[in-house]
Length: 442
Ligand code: ATP
Ligand code: AMO
Image 1 (cartoon, helix red, strand yellow):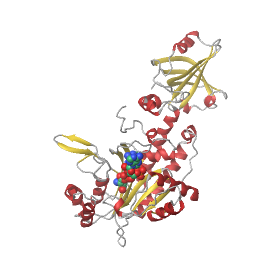
Image 2: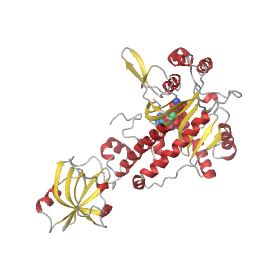
Image 3: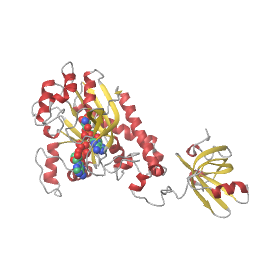
Image 4: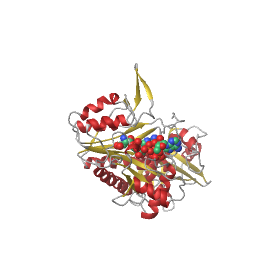
């Protein structure tokens, strides 16, 4: 290994006088005449390397002066506690090595001094990610996904991996990416929905998967991707109430873990995270309609049972809930059966309503889920009622004929979870290499 320490690992007082080797990028070179500062950057932060002209070997100074920004360098030197330096220390160099020189001009600025358009940033994502705000987003996303795994493991869930190449649609017939599969047509999977339900019949009882979903939605919005990451769970011998409780506890756990483990990254982003309160508020679909129709005058068109809650109504209702309760997260429950996919379980006494929910953030939907239909014949009827052909679902329907427990589950969009947590303007900010209608590279 070329380095002995990351810059973020150095403790100014404890390490004062110690010889260390740092490795990273030449972030900035400032020549003030009598004194030259070289700023070395790594994933954890920055270190100021100080070269005083009168005291330093002329050869070292020459290396720094010839150095191009963003070159890969290593610096071995002595740590000196220095309150005026960033992070409270500076490094007095003994050797400086340019390991790999960077070309110039750079395709984009990494100091944050020049604002670049999102498109330019995404075109040069490798450079964009060198900025500490971008690094912070992905270090936090790592903690989000790790703590979800952690939480689900604690709750006895088995992590699974299902195929992304499939023969049939799950969420209705639209929005699929077709692919050539030898001599047949196949699709990229838009949800592990059918697989996770089949695993309930297989007896795995509680499963989860964090993986890609593909949706050929043609719109270009701040909250839609054509390749997203979904956090899917399915749980046997459970109903929609059980999985809603699991979901709200999972969200709170994730927030708590991020607050505990990522305070530095949150500070870089200027975010003070509020941990949502348990239990989340629940509004039935019909209550939402009633409030929209009677208490939110900005929405001019009256809504009737069966209407989708559109983007504007979703936002205004989110504001309404926030103003009333001070909370960003809430559930909309008991959706009309006709608005939900075929697998959602209707209430026995009011079959026009389903045991389904959306978990919302003030800004957008974060998750949807439901208790599922577990009775074979009822499921066939429901598939037909959506205008789909049960023949195409035989591989799935079969698992309902030979011992399928009652079950429920949900899917959460990982990028939306990170986006709403960090108040990002655009969902693409939460993806390393986003895929949208126009973007297929890098
Ligand atoms: P879901 O995840 O259930 O599809 P969503 O949160 O992705 O919902 P919503 O904003 O609730 O999307 O809108 C519901 C549906 O409307 C989406 O699935 C999407 O297909 C479509 N939609 C959303 N925004 C737009 C848009 N700007 N242009 C065209 N269609 C849109
Ligand atoms: P749904 O279609 O609501 O439900 O998707 C679940 C969650 O995935 C996220 N999501 C997206 N994020 C970004 N871009 C997209 N194009 C996109 N599409 C979906 C959202 C959404 O809430 N099978 C059900 C889940 C279930 O019932 O278990 C499903 O896929 O955050």
